[in-house]
Image 1 (cartoon, one colour):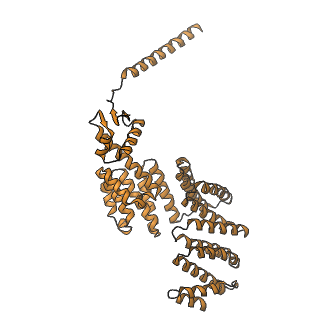
Image 2 (cartoon, one colour; image 1 turned 90 degrees about the vertical axis):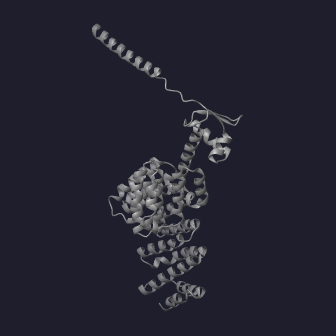
Image 3 (spheres, one colour; image 1 turned 180 degrees about the horizontal axis):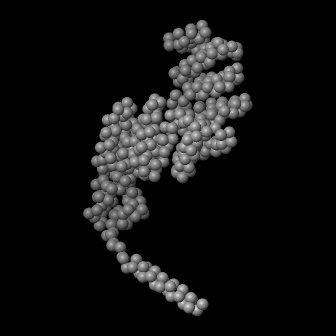
Length: 417
């Protein structure tokens, strides 16, 4: 272990020399003794961490691929652990999704050739998750469907839960809410049969919250997000805990509960996860509370990355903005029977074309009774007509007459018999 200790001692001061020492250890196939295998394993991980810290993605990917040929010397359980740990090193480097996909595919091919079924299934689940990250949803679902058939045959409940959860996320991304909910129900059923690790349980709660929010049941969604946030917090998953907290805030914004938004932002969890993500949600809450389109647009501009990179936040933020714009337009238009679109745009502080597009959509959706005169650039608002109840009364009379005729016909038929 002397060479390994020497390399670690000089790694911070002379990384090039430490790299050379690690490569020397890895250059020969390890002996089958426990000490030799341990030294090889530690050197491999230390070199991988050196590449990760330096952002040398290509060298790290090559190291993983070259190491596969040596892993036969290790026990199967140790091999699986090493492969996953090496790929995990890549996940901590931003913008490496494509390289992760390439490396994972190479590892899957090696696992197939070496008949390592459990490792292959684990890597295929990871690859499906990477496809989701790349927004290659069809590829993800195709891989998941094949994997699920195999997992159901071997009855691997724990892996089944993870893959069914991935399937639910993939269908949700494709806006197939019915299939997404069915997959989540299957995942929860499978989870009830085995011990579910905290991270997996948090993932199930998170997805449940997302699907309830899609159905506008924000109160139930909020409850699930609390559970997810607590689960991620207990496992020190900072990014996912922050996402769950953002979703909790979004639910309160959608329910117009501004006071509760402020209380959440002052809670101990919010203080722990302070940052631009929570600042963005606070800006949206303030704009929504003030019914201010200008503040809303300012928030979208100031926190563009935080509000658009997350698909869930982006979708509901768009709904919030559309509803706010609709309410503002209806309030501005209310005193008029005929008004120039440019004047409406000036009153709400938006571009004329944008206002015209929204007004036309409101008319089509029957949220506004009127017509756009594009030649004159005007909106003509129709007076609301009271419901003519004579039509409904006529239908009821006809129904009664039909019932009477039916009874008379039945009575006549019985007399003839």
